[in-house]
Length: 105
Image (cartoon, rainbow, N blue to C red; front, side, top):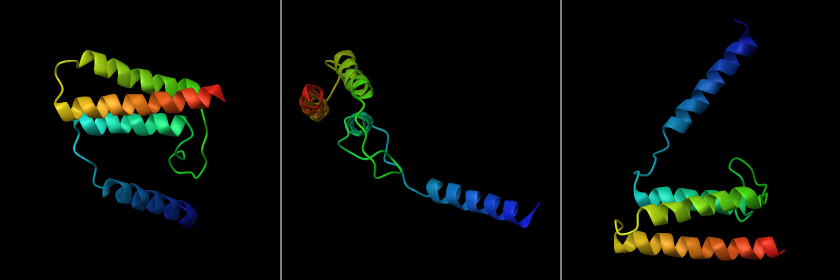
């Protein structure tokens, strides 16, 4: 293997290892909803795309993320704690308001 290729392989391995060292949050309903919220905010152009400082507004993808959260709210009705219910209600309200403002122009 050439020196250049070998260095590239070693660099890729270091990068993967450093990503694997990042502690991930516990998977809970709240962290899942917050992840979808972040995706919607990125698609609304409110947050930069991962790995970039660039913001891009894609209303179709934003609507899809919002609709996914709304579907989860409907399917989990009566099975959420008060905190989980408040979280999903507040996130949906905020995202819908941001979506309407962006869609209007």
